[in-house]
Image (cartoon, rainbow, N blue to C red; front, side, top):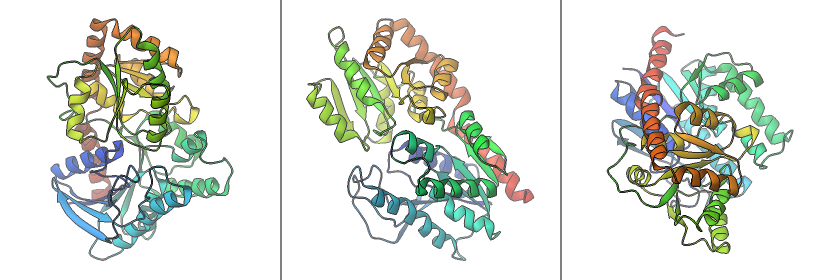
Length: 402
């Protein structure tokens, strides 16, 4: 039996999109006959929402997958400073490297999930000394996104070091997995990539996320990370402009860096009855919440550095049979167009409100878009099918020694 180690900064009980993606991937690999171990920090994200621990390591078995939690710095606030974030991001992969150096912890292959790009440290080191194959799984252009959102400055020493490390990783991995075709194009145009680049979308668990027998409520929903890349402020203001004609609520299910800012905005705009923050909900409750909503929203900011992104939440909306209103260009627009399940609005409250009103006034269209979305993700983005493709690459690499 082949032994595979997945290194991820996020894993349940965290509720991020990558936590669920890593869980589903590991579970499906284990179910297909692969011996899987996941290395992850003690639960931390959203930052400040979990109790800190100083325990060095803790192991458990979850649905046939061995999960080892390793200590790293856990920021205490919801939007920590640069030093605290870097300690969280850097100490975990260094601890993972030490753990993997033990003779007891030997694997045929390591999969490192980025961002953060530092998870590649143990994969790179162990690949260079020749004791393991390495798949580099890239879900996000972390550096570019941070520059676009104003957190980093192009040309700074931190950016130069990070790009150099990214370049080194891409030159030495045995396989590079990307979540969208545009992400693959951007990586190959910027760096010399020695390994094949394979499309492994975020996808969705279509067994869990499916239309539920729930009565529709007069609400739209956002389910995901409440972070800087999302234009949720514009959606909240759109709801304010619409509620002269529609008695509509916006449910924001999740947590993240900008939640406190959004809560202050909602209070200042007298929207506390229309915009509801549910906080983080158990994953098992999300399909019901989506199914009883009229529309899902996926409002990416309109930045060139985010055009490669296809938010996991959009797949989840479609899997539950509801249409979505998106913002942004690139992959999210392609997803809306090809699936027939989404509408892309400009990043203004007025445009979002107009798109929502048009859709809400046409129930037959909403139903048809929901049906198309469910069919589309079941055919193209089911996580079990995606994981079986990954398994084929694992077997080819580890059996042939390619």
